[in-house]
Image (tube, rainbow, N blue to C red):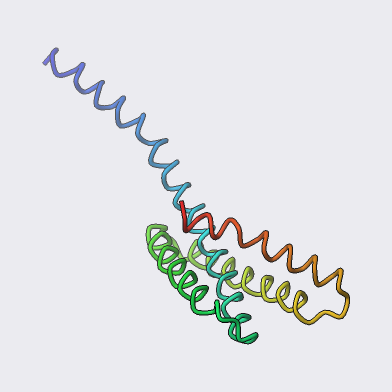
Length: 135
């Protein structure tokens, strides 16, 4: 009986030390799912814009969008709770709407300076998305 007590203490210590690790992994998964949600929204807006402008790169961007959506769905499936899923959906739609606005401004605004700034901002917002897919 005396020999099992140190073993129980060791197991308890290991269980307690693993709890923050599980929480950190869950937090990392939630942040990754949020990043994929935002990128899926931005790439969806870019795909629609490229189709509208008859850009030959539209199919390549659509492939990236589909790839991002698949990664988003895989990571978001690991996050429990309806509120978390709703928040991810809202983030995705908000990113899509905001990116669409930037692309519309870049393409159709009469002020060349404003159009350039909108395009630069849209491209800067897409860089983390491309980095997520190519790491």
